[in-house]
Figure 1: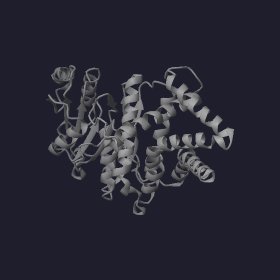
Figure 2: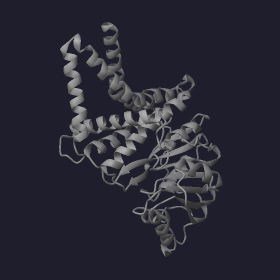
Figure 3: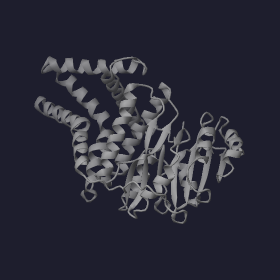
Length: 385
């Protein structure tokens, strides 16, 4: 039994090391050797007659602090007014989001923007909004964006150049934060951008960021009502049809919101639940026919969903093997101490960047483990709050 437990422990350690170190290193190395499939940057503007129509859908839940800036930002986008329409859906907001949005829409600086604001009395959640309103949109291209994310002015012009390629059905924007809560968070998002770029160069990015992404309206399929991560399930359902996604670093979504510690924990619990759900529902992406997409999904998203459970299991194995060698007990105590210290340490605590990155990761996996449990126990709330 001790030999079996020791072998299992070593296997778990290898999987954890592979996901965090070997896979990213291998991915980045392969990406450097892979010729980019993106269109080269075009220095001329496409003729207005050849531009596709675009519909932007903005779900909003209690966004009074950001909704005015968002509307002014949309009004400033560089795209012909008659080719662009915007729909903002206030989803059972308990603040003044709808009132502020209507006031801003009456401003003279927004007059040229074809915008409609809908106020839903009942909160239905983001997936309910997507399933209900996307089929009603008129644009050939649909863009989904968060209220708190400002878009680069030329985002739409850059986006449509990528859609010239008929096989491209998804264009993902790059995500940046105006203010990070910690160096660990800042390091995490820098790493995420690098990984997305590398994945895209090898086939397709594995999921996109919900702050901003575009897809061809004709390829939309309604999502299951309990879907948690639309920014993964929706794009991957399109890729499963043989289409390609592009991750474009020239398209920027600037996140204004700096989440509080409690809100950040809630988001990470949600991400943990969503990661497990998307592994179970998108397991078809592991089929060899998806080639590099299958490799990226297995090594990245699939393992990420399992890592919290693997970390817990290896900790229990260390404790179980402590009778064989006291070193395993010491290792277990060090791990538990690190998790506890990371838990009680404020995000803004000044410490070396490596320590902040480690604490950010530990807190993320702790929240993800809780999210996985809530999902398995069917106690997870799929709506906004």
